[in-house]
Length: 375
Length: 219
Image 1 (cartoon, rainbow over the protein chains, first blue to last red):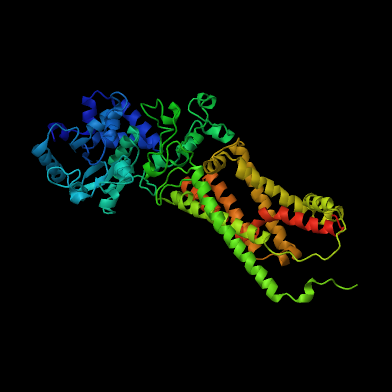
Image 2: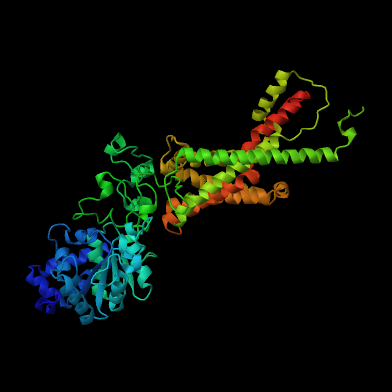
């Protein structure tokens, strides 16, 4: 897929696309600001990128719905960040590339060879391991083999979307394809950056990629390998509805007065308190809105196993009694059955212990104990 | 399954089962015990015998005037943190949602920020009663492992709940998981330690009052 354009630097590409130096610096400063980097980093990032050869990116898709790529490519109008992504040398992407069949396989092999050890491997989708690797096989190769080969020559791996980061919907119960997240296949051999979300926020993807290609360093990550700058706070902490939570004002249904007044959606199942993402700050569609702002609670899509954590519409603090090992809503009838069963056993034990106590009393009792005392 | 899923799933289920089993076990075991025959001649009517029990429940809830200077403050401390605990447990919206998911109905709650203030005050009172227990020679002599462990496990629920609300020490879901686990532990310990006083306190006062009324010593 490499063209003569690949020899151009990012700055030259931007110039061709009509992006001024000032506009580019403004964009880089905004990215640096969003990532909580020092103000001078914006200019440094812009200068570094302008003179840098276009970083090679190989994009592999496994078990996914293409929502992540849709999010990335259909970001708000043709924005600068969209063009930035275009300036990256996207050497392989089986969804966007024109080639198919043998030509696509050759392109992939060439991409791996030409930039061995230098390319950024972007993966979306979980990796199926069931049926001897038959699921998601392409060109006669299993997804696991393709991923392992691609990972070997990568400078870093960026997992976009919850499927590649944590397994996503394919990993959810009953996981029919024995799917796994990328980290489970690759292990700790390569630096892995997870950008979960279903889908992730476009600016979070481009921002993370930009920082990596600019500095050559993996950003600070949390324990789930997510960039702390974007995943350092819960949605609840940054939510504009948080004051209503603190005041105890909650919407009880999706069309009640509370909902119309924009009160907190906690009781309607919002998972904001346990979800780390930048939705409440970066937002979507050029900062226009995010799910909670539209009136629906957060479903926690950037967290591991969010599909299996019970109903999206049950308050976070509710009990979750699914079948063993999985979450699920609890019904008062279940509680009644459990407590009644326990109570019957408890009553039997109580009667038995009282009976034993009476026998013990009788055995130690003297006939005179029950006789009136004199005086 | 993550820690939070375990805490509010299987662990909670087991804890509730043990709680119910233990509470019913102890209440039935207590109710079926043979009382020693009272060979005294009844000195009150059956009505006074019964009302004496009820009167004792109220009259023993506060020290006799002559003891107030010595024990009034301690009693007030005890009542205050109990009221605080009730408010926090029953009037915090996430708790109402939790209890509602088990019981099938909900009730109005207090503002979360007010609950946070009440929690901090309650925890302070908790520390105060512990201080009193440790520094007062008589209290110290009367205290055993049960007293300290029951205090610890209840305080742990408060501390983890506050930490989860304030995001102190770890991520929210981890703190929430530890909070729910501490509640699970409290439910398991409850029937077998002095926390059982929640069920015993009024019946035992009533029985004592009734026995004394029968003997003509209405308190």
